[in-house]
Image (cartoon, rainbow, N blue to C red; front, side):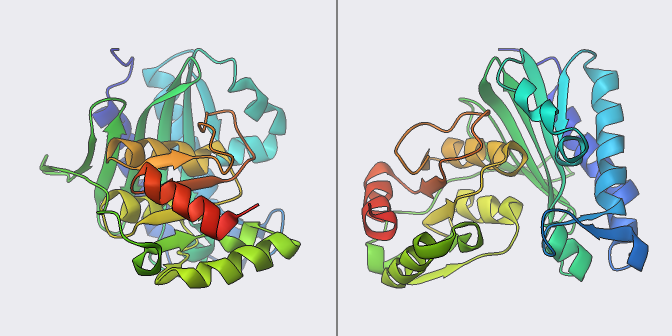
Length: 274
């Protein structure tokens, strides 16, 4: 299908927000520029809010009538999230993914956007402000690393590995109680796992072929829609933990990305279990 907004234009909007509102504030935030939301490590900064305002303004000018869902917009109006399931056309944005890192002065954060048409993710973009490049995908057209000079490199997930040789990403902090203990114990079966506290960079790492899996429990659309499409278009196999497809309106059920279906089944059995 023909998108009402060219994906390269959307990519440019994310870059503009980073250059204008995010990078000038990096390692320059004042004490009043950072606030906690749901918990002390769930942060929002002046840069998040300013970047989302800019992105929203640009998108609304380019696509009048499109539903805009941003992380900070939903924080202000939680009912907005419920409109996604029935929206004909929506743009979902995370102005700064990895806000904890950004606020801590750690250069591992990203700007993400996904385009949803009638309940299906059809485009996804993850921009890295520090590296000044994007990973992006349109449904059915593959996933690519694109640089500002126009160079594009096709992405492909890693080759499958036995469980004991797998390296991956696991956001264990959003599993709780005995489930968390169970999963952390079982993750000892893989070669190595890490968490960047930034889904943007974790999905980039997965889609670029550097790790064999990524595991999440908390599902908010701005964190996962873009990365899931990019990872799938790079050849990965991504499902909720019960094996069902991940859809834009899902906010629970966990998510597991793997290099192929057999690896997914192995990880689901050995790490998640019953």
